[in-house]
Image 1 (cartoon, rainbow, N blue to C red):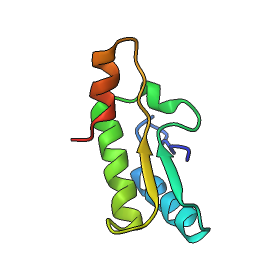
Image 2 (image 1 turned 90 degrees about the horizontal axis):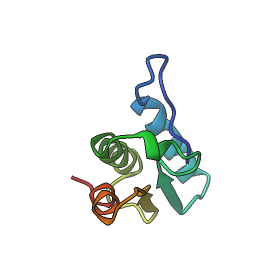
Image 3 (image 1 turned 120 degrees about the horizontal axis):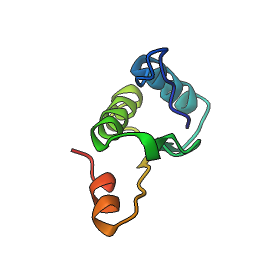
Length: 86
């Protein structure tokens, strides 16, 4: 899924929630938060965690959809930090 941004370059969390709900309603069974267009590489771990929480809340914590989070970096420590939601 893509990450919508507002005019001030902050994540549009309302738009992200609407996108997640749309994808779930369309039958999509898996979503990668911050990964489709490469925007996850420019997001902080806190921004990615909040985006994941937004998607989970939007589709329901008990949803059967699979949610993955973008994780990359130039070191194992960096990748590990990005891979864990807080």
